[in-house]
Length: 154
Image (cartoon, rainbow, N blue to C red; front, side):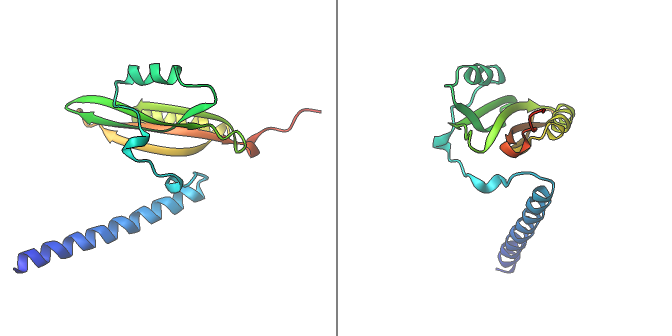
């Protein structure tokens, strides 16, 4: 009986620490200019089917005008990287532009993040998974707020 109580206590404590860490990361992200990733929750019904990186690109190229990949995520399924996306109408009243990327290595992600931040974009959301070789693969959506527009030259 005691080991079961101990196990339950460990689970409760682990959850509390995980929540605390998550709050710290979110507040740090907010301070860095990142948008709150919890502003929209997606369910499985919101997503496309899982597909290869190339199939995801084909789906992106065929998307309807005025829509965007509002969220993209990946997974390692039996050693094969798969991706899926949730579509939405692009909110032109809030943002000038958007960009979506999936299957980025840590180096590719760093280079992209640096460029996007310098160009006035903010991170809409980020999802990371580990591929079969233990490499972190990043999926990210960026948006450029209307306030980032440069004033017209006079």
